[in-house]
Length: 261
Image (cartoon, rainbow, N blue to C red):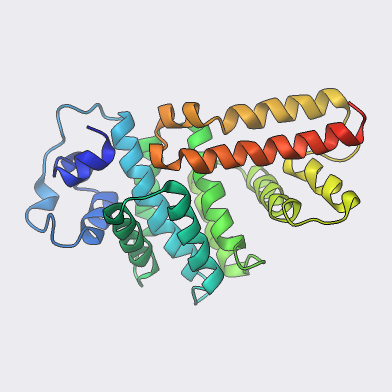
């Protein structure tokens, strides 16, 4: 049974007792109203099993998307559209989509326990660095969806990145790459497209071929869909990971073509 089957089957007790379980239970409505806090851990699941991490990822990412989107006081139509795009890319079934929307709404509420949710998610991920990066990229894309990251959103995201173990410099670099990705797909002028292609790979235009290839291989490995799923990315999010690798490859091909390679 996959993570979603565990949730629907009522055997998601391994999540209960913590803030992620409370948020998930609230989003599920009255499915599991009784005795949630006292549900014992599922003995069939290890403390950091793939199914457990997948459930934690799904719960944390959609609730914190709502929290980030509301950080500047309002949720813009672009941010709502981005959340829907993520759901569309995941090809969620109606019940899954309903749950994702419920989690997003939970994150928007005053008093949402973002710090506690984040801390439990960090523990569940157990230093799965690539998974944490994917998580941050989705949240960062939410803040960038309306064309600019508001200062309040940036403060929230800085705190999330720090809580997940990134340095400020590492998160600054991720934001630069994400900004470049948004522009790269819309660039019309070849020179603008080339400049942003370098930034997508986290490089300056003065980087040599060896540096370009090294950065490309590293990013492709970090976003490899099968590897991410094995680390705990919900299988429904494979399409998002695939799109990431396509964007990275497109940036790499743009650079190589400009250099006649």
